Amino acid sequence: MTEIYSEIRSFIDDLDVSNLTVARKVKLDALSAYIKKSSGTDSPIKLNFICTHNSRRSHLCQVWAKTMAAYCGIKVQSYSGGTEATAIFLTIIKTLQNTGFVIDKVSEGSNPTYKLNFTDENHPMTLFSKRYNDRYNPNEEYAAVMTCTDADTNCPVIPNATRVSLPYVDPKVSDGKPSELETYAARSRQIATEMKYVFLQVK
Image 1 (cartoon, rainbow, N blue to C red):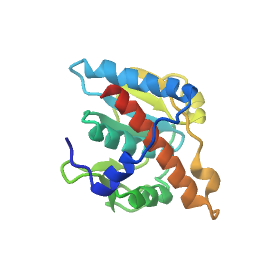
Image 2 (spheres, rainbow, N blue to C red):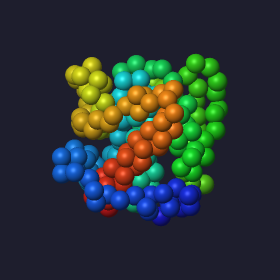
Image 3 (cartoon, rainbow, N blue to C red):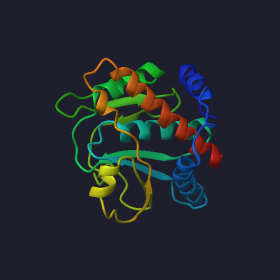
Image 4 (spheres, rainbow, N blue to C red):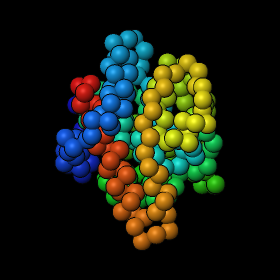
């Protein structure tokens, strides 16, 4: 089993999946079903989390899916993208760092690139904003997980992918307010909890 940093492992251990609603579990079970089905093939399990700007929710999902897969001993390739490219919102980086992830900025500019680690054993994850069909992302045999209703509407067709609808409320509503860090932490915890549920169904 991958040796996840102790602070992150303790955070995951404390997550309670028992309070998820039946309606939410139906959506999460669709993702679990895709992962189960893909684990029975020779192809790698590829998950591409998609929102509008690839700046907030999709990155949280990408990171937590990869981390929870490692926590449960399941190998996946985790990606993210948007209907347009912007930049990762800095509070996302702060929120993940506050949970124990080690993150280094490796490029500057309007759309910086970050390297993220949750264990010393793995290669770091590369995070930057990009379109869902960027060359960095898979182009066939993957789950297109729609993390916002806007992206779901503006991407009516995603070829060569299994579509899964899993929308989250955008923490952007708190930007610039005293509650900003608290709101982002709550959304990250929600996504982490739900990704834990997803992978426990597969394990």
